[in-house]
Image (cartoon, rainbow, N blue to C red):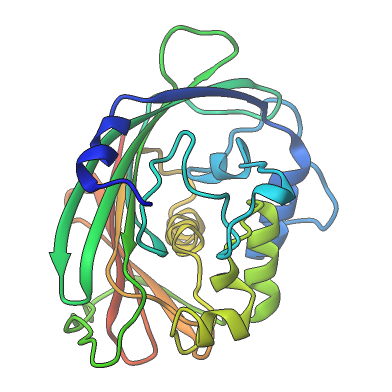
Length: 290
């Protein structure tokens, strides 16, 4: 028997604290995966090297026992996260405030709290939204170095006759842009780097036959990382204070997609977005600069 939405709200306020150390090898592996200009294969960053924004996702990895994995490849529902009955889980978006840089060698502490659980009705049935607040501290300091709000949406399995929401056209004016080919190896490497067992990213039979998607789903966090990577390539000296993104539409591996950026005239923010091969907006984001 599944908990009711009213029961799920009792998860609000639950928290957990985990620890990790910012080690060099994940940094070097992601740099190689993104093909960042000037990356030397096999070279590890020195102690004190700052993590680029969003690269903290390489740490605090979920480590469920193999026996505790659910049918979708995620950890079974319950525990810290509420046991939402809807089977499809997607990363809807996130917001960040970068108070202090995180650096190679730092000892980190992350406190995660269920900030909200809410239910809505959509075109394809019930939707359950879970918002998690993460606060990251470094080297025993009391002050928070990074604040993240992570928004997760759970939805029902696809049904015959479901109507997809209408797509939005992506902006056409961009100062920066980059074409991305999301092949199986890129998706595998990012799943491995983030220890993400969600089968929609690597199991083609599962994602097409069980979840009803046309191809492997490109990770939302990977697309967000590629947006920040685009900013870093074109404005390497920029200091990002805040960043927020919203996933608008799934991206699949069956076609290339592209990431775009347009700095504001005042120089204090950058509009970043991703679009699919048809020009539909798939992710919308804003970076606020110091």
